[in-house]
Image (cartoon, rainbow, N blue to C red; front, side, top):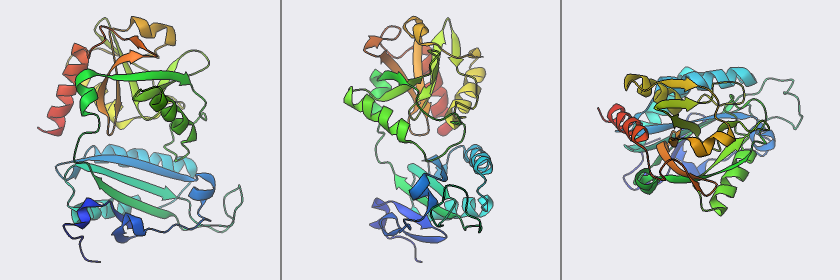
Length: 290
């Protein structure tokens, strides 16, 4: 297929099982197990200057998720196709979405007896403006909500209904994110972000366990903090501790490093983005734009 025209790059451009096409032309069988059961894995990569950011780390996590749910596919070929699609799209600033399903099969809860061919979707979307720009300057507002998700959040599965319900709850409250709290009043993570706190000059974040997604931006921020001589304590933050934090921020592929100034309507720290959050955000930008 020929490269997309200049007009086409305004639309998401996709690779569906090895064929490039506009995303709107991709057709998926209703018997695909992703459609029926959410039996699929996904990844989202940020694109800066036409290059996927933290590419190795994202593909390492993709491999781990695929291994955990026993979907066998050629990740090396998938990565090569992603790079070819990104080049053809001519997108310089955007996101790449990857989605690998177990494939199409008759509807049974157990895995198909006959091995299926995984279905693979890659698409590229251009970001012309920073969707979080205003909140980087003034800070974001978040709510807390009970963590109703399954116990293997370390697997980046497309089963995100609990996350969607929490995100909608945040939108209806006029907030930018929902933060999950487990039955022990422990902060786990956001609906689509990782959570950090700052207390007495130290960076706090939950340790990686089965109930936490190993966020790629989270891992980068831990490295950036050490480079900036900011102590990092991987210790869970509890709900009663939130009002006593000096600063709070969330991280994610598109959120990057986003200061939080309000939780459940109560200010965090001074109610403005804090100095350590700003230092880390500057370090992030230098990593993206050296």
